Image (cartoon, rainbow, N blue to C red; front, top):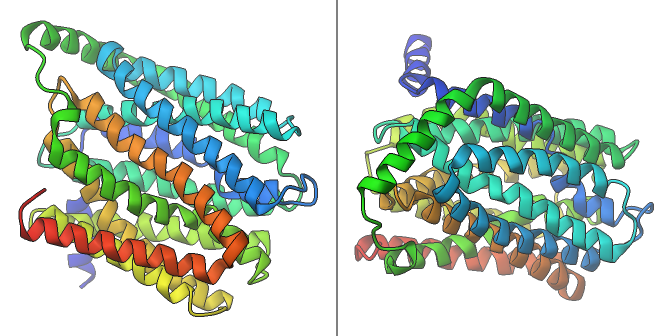
Length: 404
């Protein structure tokens, strides 16, 4: 039994390129400082800042708008100047903006600099996704993205756990640590990936000259339909990092360290389970089957959450359910868009996919926080659960009809 388990893990992690591992290491270091986003709502509603949950939702709305615009610009620039330069500017600029934001108390300026920060940070994502595609092969692409997600979530686990403890003493330190890890990630990228990135830039210029540009992503109607469904799903999923944390504190009376541990648990599950899960599932069924199953599990999480108050042990069970949904849906969503793109338009496809998540960062927290303020948290969870149920049924229907 142990031998088979070890063999499965070895198979899940074998065959990935050196550059893929380096990108994941850089992502791990960067995301280990992810402390601001999961605690931003708590920071805004803390006695120190004194803003309402509605105000916190508006700040997240600015975050989402900036992310949406940053993803669009980042995708365009990735196709033009290459993924390395875009990632470097995003990491360096993000570090500076995190540090600046830690000093700001005025609500209008918080909104402005949150927008600028998310704009710069989100420009990183389409460039990073394009880099993973470049350094992987069709046979290991889903696993390459899963390794990157593993790094993100391991970093998330470390950042959330540490952030919960640090937030007890000073929310400002969260901004400084986030900025420092951005800066360290930029240094590592220069040291380890500059030469490979220069090769990519030369190769990209050669391909651009040799291959006439094909149709843009906006003419791919099936992909646009996919993007709409992803946006609806992501708008619901993002509540785990925003409205849900406020619900844990205000209604369930969990402490910041307990909330941090719940968020960290999400990351730990992904670290230990996702790669081997993808290794076992990839190629066995249509990608949309796994996506539909994953979205359905997220729906179950919200519907159960809306039934009534829970204690900390049950909260861990519920986080297990939504994490299982995340592990099924998101890696295969990544595979879906990358399989529809080609070398000349990969930045466009990556940008539109990133923009879907960015739009969700605007719509989800902003609308749900207002809904929670006017109708209560339980009603909000039922709304999210119903939306995810409809999205899961749509993915399943489109898979059966072969529309996507």
